[in-house]
Length: 151
Image 1 (cartoon, rainbow, N blue to C red):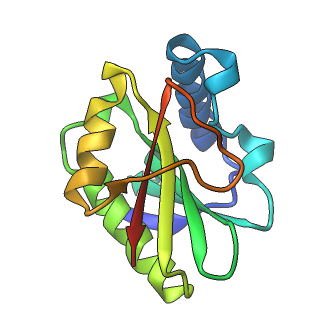
Image 2 (cartoon, rainbow, N blue to C red):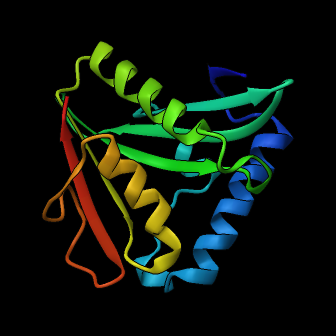
Image 3 (tube, helix red, strand yellow):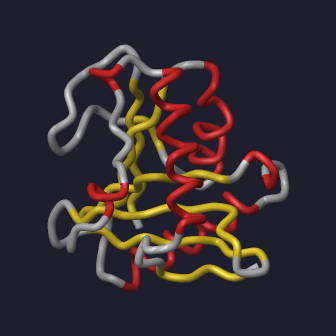
């Protein structure tokens, strides 16, 4: 498996992201859904990575630049067929390393508060993220939790 910066042009990554958005719509009320679609991820302030297994995307994640020192982790997803293999932890470590290399000193994220998101919250806690108040344009929301990490 390898991790690449992805331009989001392939149908396979579009499928993985559609799966992600469909899950978010099924679990999270519309007003609390913060996942970005393909167009939302194709902006200059976002760097997007895919984990490829035999050239097929099996996981993804992105960062969105908030300012010169702070970025937001976005669109972390592992395909259902590849969960439980440590791919998300490997990708998160890669994103943390790349975020530091890009000059960020803080990485924050929003994720869901529902039980469905427990594995994600556990992953972030293990990586040293701590709970925080809403950041950037987020507002308090019972369906969201916010975490941050100093890099």
